[in-house]
Image (cartoon, rainbow, N blue to C red; front, side, top):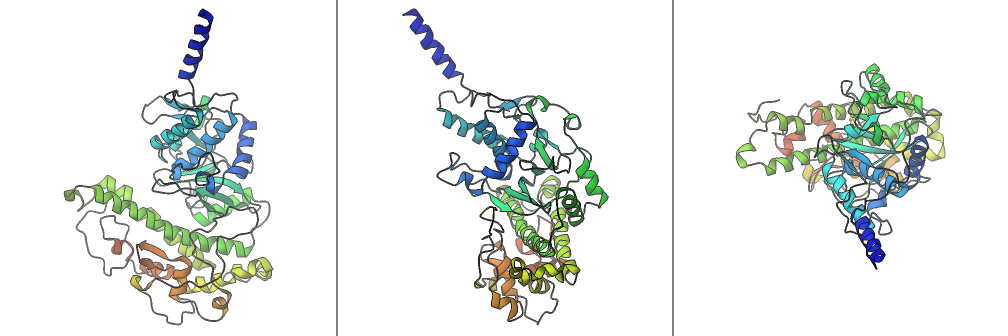
Length: 461
């Protein structure tokens, strides 16, 4: 009888001290290779939305998805998951936590994921990761890109041309399909003092507390490359492609990549301005007049607007270049992309027929037909080019000039519910110098729809 009670007590005590999962292996180069293969094969957009997924119903933002990718693989492989604890300086968060002892193992895992997601952000990621070299061996699936305070991407593949496939979630936190983009992150690593941004790998537990420059595998190569091209996105990504690719990128793919990137950068500005609007709404009435210096820095779009202007200029510079006359355009797989040239010309009013600039209230353009831009063939994620509405129908590519309504139907920027502008409208706001980065200004002024801009009386920090 005594032995029975001893065994029962041992069983209860063991259950009461249950970790989220037991660690059976340790991180190594071999396990990092398995992680890369798992990301390439199993990290899918529907991982949090498919009823068939054990992670169905988990809410994410961009940082959550990057942390969760590492956490889920660690759980499935019985590897340690250890990160710094932002709520307890010097402490850690790991799969050994036993605060959910009374829950069944699947519930413990879900609670752990939600806890990690609650306390982490893109601001905490630099402490849990380190920058890697720009080589085929180092920049592989499973690497993340971090822009602290703004965004995080997961690198899920690198194609034969050296272009990364990225996946990411977005704000606000919600249960959603992860977004897929066969292109580079829109940022260029630039923190040459603290090395907090850029292409990064998660640290192994034994290296978690080391200074970043002492972590095995640390490299400042990406920052030196970025500086060598004056942190120019196009030139930097060209360097990446030469280092990571196995053959040159066909001209039509480069044109498409820059055109689609422009659409994404323009559409992405909506989310950032919406964050500023939502933040102002939480402030007491007396503080909404002028934001503090810290708030201005957090919600201004100064740097973002510089990237936006450069994205337009990259596309403009392609017009008339050798990329449009390359023989590759004659290949059958690239013929459907020929509509990109008249669309690019329409954005910059090159060969414009005088079609009037449409006002936001007129922007509910009708569909132009054609196949969904995200319906790709081959081994790519299902929602590629999710930010494009639809590719134009063939007859619109050849039968008439591209109108502002066509541009809106292809890549309309809905800056407010029911109010949409085109890339042509946005470029004119940039060239007219009416686009405002100032979070103290009105929504219409932020998008350059008020000319001349009305002074707010607030300081520009």
